[in-house]
Image (cartoon, rainbow, N blue to C red):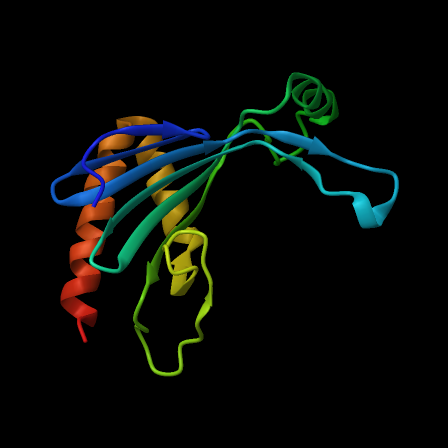
Length: 161
């Protein structure tokens, strides 16, 4: 377990309440290209919050409405008052788990960028993430840390093998 705070590559990791907590931000990008095989589009900033202990990580992922300045200007110019899409609202993307053990029968193992093993059993919910995103905007990160820890305890209690 990590017991001191580390800052590297837009990531902070600390030990709190016997959990390893990680908060990371990814930078926005504009990787558009005329050749469709090389076109990776545009994307804003990702916020990822993770609690980890004993082979189980619970994450909250949100897409924040922070873009490169020229991309933000372009998106703003394309938005109209008649459109329901607002690229500057942000959204909850995932509340999910990454586990070293399966949580249900025949659950497939997958590549994993969260657990050190590089493999995990994963499942998540975008709908729950939307609910949490609204709460995050109103209450800040402490609301999410509390929810992540509660979710971890729920997963351990209900799915302990």
